[in-house]
Length: 165
Image 1 (tube, helix red, strand yellow):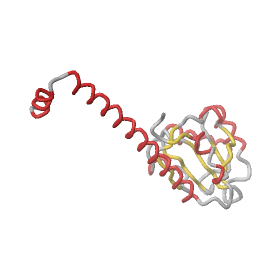
Image 2: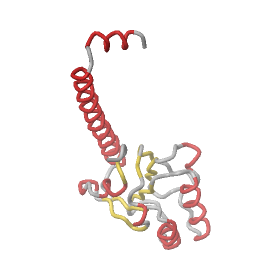
Image 3: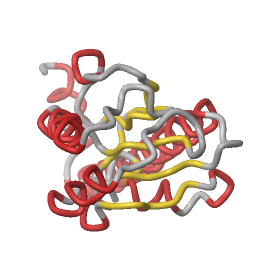
């Protein structure tokens, strides 16, 4: 189990109405956080594993510049890109999609009516739930190991060892 939500898991949230447009081989990328940006280079404002959500204002219309935009996201370790459909993105995103497929970088479209805040909430809650599940498993393992130690050793010796740590 990964610590963070993956792009594939995000796409499984049908209520978000997000569809994959390119980068199918990058679905295992982990998403630490979801962040909106309309900048032409959002990478200086985010951390690796962030999902960028945009209406498309920062995506250049020229094919070469779209490739450069995408490469900057990849170089920064961004998890993926969500573009809101029927908003401000250039009409022709063919170069962006082709490069995303080539470099296995997930590019998705969200429905016009899907608020970015809802996507961010799903990412945040899913990551919180995953971490709680892992912590629960760790507590169970620790408990079982402690029981085994107590059975195999003198409890007074164990208490003395812990006190000296």
